[in-house]
Amino acid sequence: MHWFGDLVGQQALLWTAVGIFAATYIGLMVFGKARSFVALGAAALFVVLGVVPLGKAPGAVDWNVILMIAGTMGTVSLFIESKMPALMADWLIDKSPNLKWAVILLSIFAGVVSAFVDNVATVLMIAPVAINIAKKLKISPVVSIIAISIASNLQGAATLVGDTTSILLGGAANMNFLDFFLFKPAGRAHYGVGLFWIVQLAFLAATALLFVVFRKEKQPIHLEEKTKVQDYFPTALLLGTVLALILVSFLPKTVTLGSFTATKPAALNGIICVAIYLIGAAYYAIKKQGKLVKTSLKEIDYLTLLLLAGLFVVIGGLEHVGVIDMLGQLFAKMSGSVFIVYTCLVWFSVLVSAFVDNIPYTATMLPVVTVLSSAMGVPPYLFYFGLLSGATLGGNLTPIGASANIAALGILRKEGYHVKPGTFMKLSVPYTLTAVLVGYVLVWVWWRG
Image 1 (cartoon, rainbow, N blue to C red):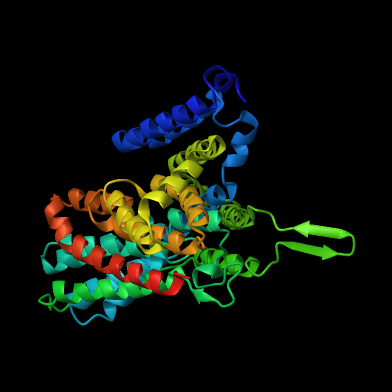
Image 2: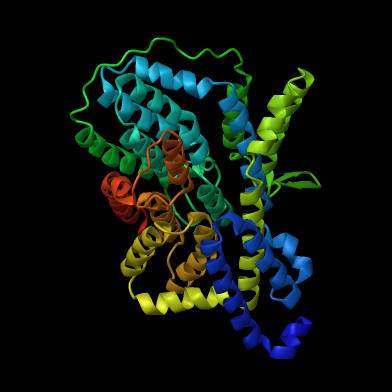
């Protein structure tokens, strides 16, 4: 036990950790622009007080998650700079008979892209297309941009690389890329439907609402000139990342050849993502396109990486002193049946994610869910998928519930459109509740036991 633990006692140390964590969460909500420093400060305090031993602090960080996010962000930046997404959006518009179909197809396209690309990046690359259409037709782009933003957020849970929350789930549940499509956890005889298909059905149900919203928008559109793409290498890099993650998912955890035994690295997915990005950076450096490399390095969200590193240490400390186990046991005793626990978890996650960034919430709740499922004697995947359905699909309820929504409203503000929360929520609330309800039912039907 650390000197502070010796001084105040283990029980007092536990409640000290709870107090610091509560203050940290309040700090994350109040000081939005300084979230990373709040999390790092809490992590440092945990180490100083001995909530988490200094020697175990680096091990508490999930480096696979950190490396996956960093590498994917770098590659996605190169992909965006190549203008390939803009060309794909232009092709969709060219095939659209009128404005209604153009907006709906752009929202679907945003969703598809967002299953593999960060949500904010997706909005930043597709929103300008919708704004150009609106300018040509002399109409407001507000509803179109909102549709693109919420569609992008919804699809974040579809694949392992679609969103930070998905990467967090993959690390906590030891899930690989293919597990998001078809999943057979240990102890289960047959494969089950993965999150990808659950998200797609939720997405289809929510998209059906857009046909009602845009039913009167029948103005014909015409694309005068398509975006030109001269560099397809970033597209190959992004496809290579996805393919490599699929291939390594087939590798066994250990390989034995005679007396030699090799173990698959825990951070293998992250190493692959970073390695492929570095190949791209080296390629453009050799071609003397250093500006492109600098741009991609700037686009990596280092503050989010620091936020996660700090949170991992804090959560590791909470586990070390028994807080996570206490919360899981308490939740199991209070909630009753598995169905009630599952229901509370999903809809509480929706409520929280409507006002709080879902990254720290998901990072905190994943270990709690693990303990909760063990205490109730049920497989954890029902609760894992319920948590992600609520936290990721539910972030669309309000303008501040997801970073992509904030980015979308920022784009509109620059164009002179100041969107009120009520305007945003007229579309986001029915869209989100439809998606969450479908996901809630499907996860329960397919994963209750």
